[in-house]
Amino acid sequence: MKINIFSSLDLMLYRIEANKVQPIRDWPEYFMSYKLVIYKPKLLSLGKYDLNPFINSLWQLLTFGKTRVLLLFDKTVKVHYFYFTPKTYRFGYMNKTDINLAQAFTWPAYRRKGILTNVLKLIFAYNSNKCKYIWGYCHIDNSASQKALERAGMEFVSYARMSRFTRIVHMVEEL
Image (tube, rainbow, N blue to C red; front, side, top):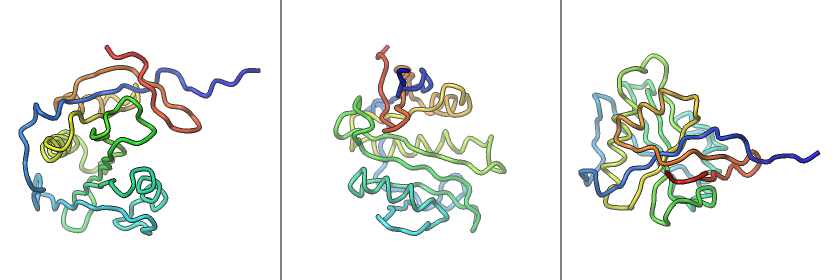
């Protein structure tokens, strides 16, 4: 029995050309009336901001310390977090200087307020002078993430597959 290590066409791949975005120089202290924190996880950081220490350590290893996490707080309540990373072995379709939008989560009480769309635009603006493309992907059934990526200005590029074991994302065919 042959085992297929690739799942079906389960991802949608998006990108935006960084030079099409109006750049900003510095992260704002507040964004959408929430406190903005840019966190650089350390290799063995033990769950700072209640983020998963395993994921923090893994991203730091894979990106040689270049992973960043954008967090929004409503006073002391975490509203949203968003990981963004440089190219790694997992994303062969990216250029060396490109940025990948990784894991994001908005707490249920704060959903449907445009937070993800606006956070994406902020990440684009801050990184627009640092790369050629900003890439993101989401599951084909995740219509909320698809809408947020499109509203933020990203264009659908291709379907993609992710290896079950290595988690490498393969672009199927650029449209």
